[in-house]
Amino acid sequence: MFRSSAEAVTPAASKYLQQLCKHFAHKVTCEWTPETGRVDFPFGDCRMTAEGDRLTIACESAEDEGLKRMQAVIDVHLEKFAWREELKLTWQTAAQQLA
Image (tube, rainbow, N blue to C red; front, side, top):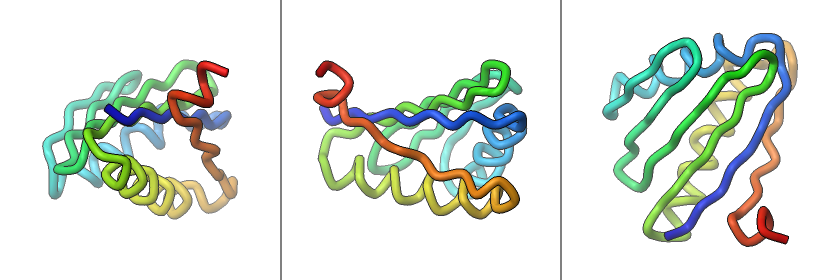
């Protein structure tokens, strides 16, 4: 299993979590509250949490390509939704997180 995660510090963490989930729900299965979200992409699963000003996104896929695709999809959409803040995610793989 391939895993990665990223964090963004923004006063709109909950807003972006909900916006991402609502958008993805048009094509894939999603569940969300203002604090947590789950997106089931065909190529992997994504979990999001919003705590105060921190948005945390964790992705998991059976294949490395699926993980990279999920990261790219999330990056493009978050950058579009958060254009005023110019948010950019820095993804860390599970191996990087252990180091």
